[in-house]
Image (tube, rainbow, N blue to C red):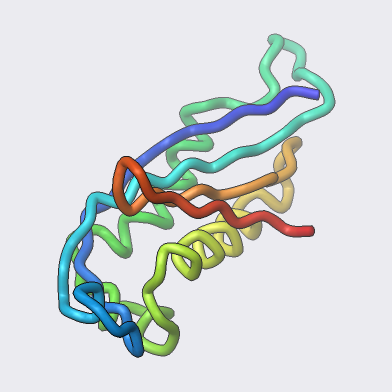
Amino acid sequence: MYKLSVKQHFDAAHALRGYRGKCENLHGHRFQVKAKVSASQLDDIGLAFDFTELKRLLNSILERFDHTNLNETPPFDNINPSSENIARTVYEALKIELKDAPVKLTGVKVWESPESAVEYREG
């Protein structure tokens, strides 16, 4: 089994609705996002999947959040823009993008700081 990952980032502001503490106020992060995929075999040139393509797909999802107030950006205008919900949202969007790819999406990890991260995966 081959396990690949790429990491990108986006900068955004958010405020956690219903949170009792400083994070209920508008504040910003440089969110780091890692997409993880797996493959059981290599193609005819020895690749499980092209890193450039995986980065492109991930970036196409993240660019809609970059330099925004997430609370005003779908779907976070309806759900809390927590790191947990960001990870699940990116996972679900990337899963659609990879539906015909020779890899399986295994997880999306989001860091809101160097010390704090959450990973979403199915199962």
